[in-house]
Length: 272
Image (spheres, rainbow, N blue to C red):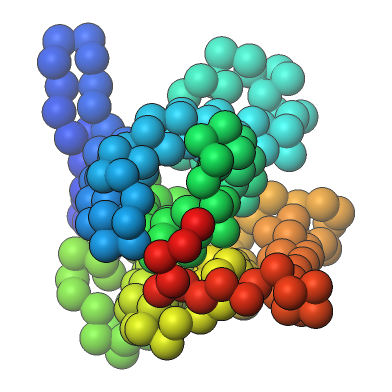
């Protein structure tokens, strides 16, 4: 039976020579839902309703470029020999850390130009970013990528997974850890947690920094299960190193802002 398993079609729609991949559709859906969540919350916090629409119009293209550039840089041995593949993002190869760095820089520049608190924007946007990441991992599922090492079908069935996930994890004659799913579930749990923490009236900036810590902790452990990691050395995974750095930086910024009195404004405060 296993030899006859067919993977899900990664193509969402074909219009003549144009192919629309599920990978891009799913990422787009995640971005849209995240935007709607941020727009709704930004109005509650007294920002103009178009603020996050404007931010996203700048941040998403830059995030895609940053995510792709990050991935290509660390796979340069391949792309230097196949430069035509650099633009083929529909086949996967978007590194989330690169996208986050580009998006955060873009958001910081936007906030400075518009004279809006960057930390307020970051706090409002944190659950939306994590929601987009949680949904976006299903694009990896459609491409049969971002998986872990080999496992048995019995192991996957023991996780009470539906057949469509179990069957999609059958790749080239073997079953694999659905690490895309582990990260997606971790991120969805984080979204719920961040939405609940809003009511705790955190100091401004700390909701976003909590997101950074939450995501990085999960990514560190899940990355250790993956077989397609970008490697810094033969044994050192780039994503795990970045995760440790981000946790340390987030905790450091949180402490520094408190000591210096830069975080006296609370999340629910209306002042800029």
